[in-house]
Amino acid sequence: MPQSPELHVITNGRQSLDEVLRMAEAAYAGGMDYLHIREKQRTARECMDWVYALAEVVPKQCLVINDRVDVAAAAACRGAHLAYHSLNPSEARKVLSREQWIGRSVHSGVEAEQAAREGVNYVLYGHIFPSGSKPGAAPRGTTELAQITAGLSIPVIGIGGITPGNVSQILAAGCAGVAVLSGITDAIDVKQATLAYRNALDTWEGHV
View 1 (cartoon, one colour):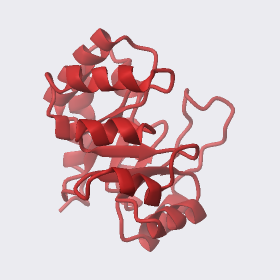
View 2 (view 1 turned 60 degrees about the horizontal axis):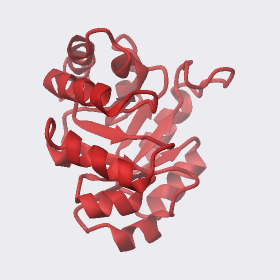
View 3 (view 1 turned 90 degrees about the horizontal axis):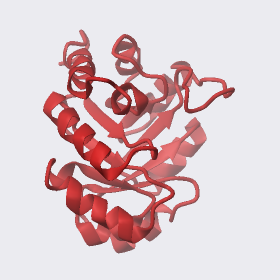
View 4 (view 1 turned 180 degrees about the vertical axis):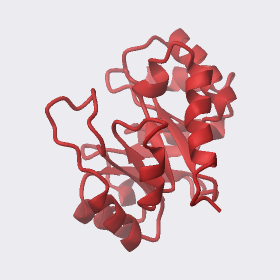
């Protein structure tokens, strides 16, 4: 992964393809690095059609497919992101090319260490701050996050309740970047919202 802090945007599963196309194009113009297609309710065929359509507005190497390793492999996009119900990393690697990334969502230091041992390229840790997508669930904060980043040799991306105003806390804890859902996908002006995150990432005082 590049040294510059990364900005991952994750689809919310509530928007149509046309809405996501407009959002993705604006987010990419604002500095998004990767778009995760996280559409649990869609079939493999639908996810593949989304890849084809999105590749017309953003580089295909910016696209990460959530759960559907088969789609990621067939599309030859950036890679696949695994959840607890997905294939495990060693199984996914049999399907994906050597160049493609495998990411995994983790919620503890134990899970992060296990994912690293299984050969993932990065982990997504959260939720860190209170999040509308996790109502009633206590946020995990940055203490364990800092312990995880210190113990892993692979990048950790923070997720959950992240705003441009708290990006610095995520980076100070050792993260390689942040992942955002509603802060960008639901924004009235997606490009400006993305630029705010991009600026927070690029101007963090600890960034070399």
